[in-house]
Length: 384
Image (cartoon, rainbow, N blue to C red; front, side, top):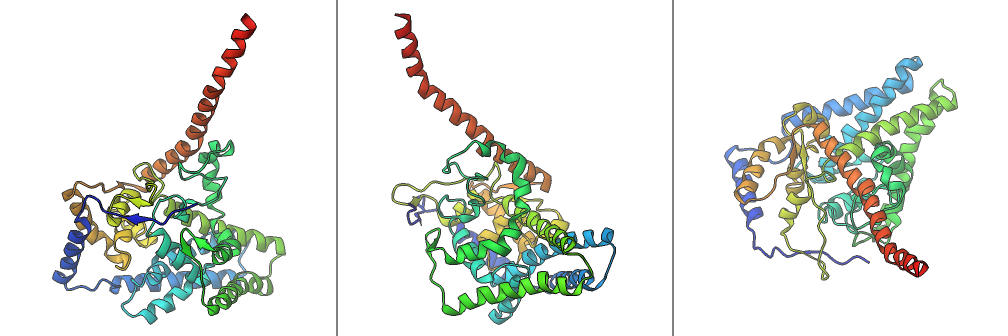
């Protein structure tokens, strides 16, 4: 049973209030808006054009198999990039100061397979508030029984091998999202401790927009493309696996690495840190200086800045990151960062081993120790 979480800030830290003043000063002195600038709108055009071109090329191009397979891979990857760069910001209302504009771009989330309404609840409301808290943050409840991301979850025999098969399972993330996850989350009574009560219109939207996605990516290709059914299934799966792997890697490298923590609330459900400090402790950046990853990942390689300022467009993260890091240093707080994608990936791999293989080995040792007195007693009796 989960408890309602409260961030008590027992140390009376002024970290976040100080940081917000510095960030506000930066935008005021630079005479900049916190939303999208010209460079950001160029990104929007680039990724939407790329996604549309790839989709139409597959649908109408009638290319040979050696061309179709790479196009399927690229379509899956571009779907993830559109989610990262456009929809993610729009759903956070950080893309534009105009809520109607954000709503229009958030709608695109439906066209890449996911419900923006359900995502807003699971991600914006729950994950951003209760980051890495077991029983509350469902982002660390990826595949119960198969992947273990928390010490609070019992470890089983299979999970000792999770560092081998986890990355393969990440590839199924989008396939699950398209056919299962949104429905499951929507009809749960709670997501974490958030009670799921929906307006009636959202029931219609969930099924209607899913039907549009199935029409665009299943029915229409089968009707228009000159391919066999099994060739379509292969191409569809390649697209989904590519999108899922990109999504899984980017999201997990932000929170499930060796430098991040998984705080435990006390019996009253209190977290002793202020919310902003909690975000520093549970979040990590990777390849912060890479312009390529910043362009592709929509700033999600700078999750510290995103978690602290989700309503600031990601195009500004490199600039405000310097302020965040300096303020964290001033308050003697951690600023978790990995210099490259590969170093973060290695750290995630080590965490999978720690929470799987090493946790299971520890469980076996403790179990054997509990049995030892009984065995010893039997030996003594036999010896007598």
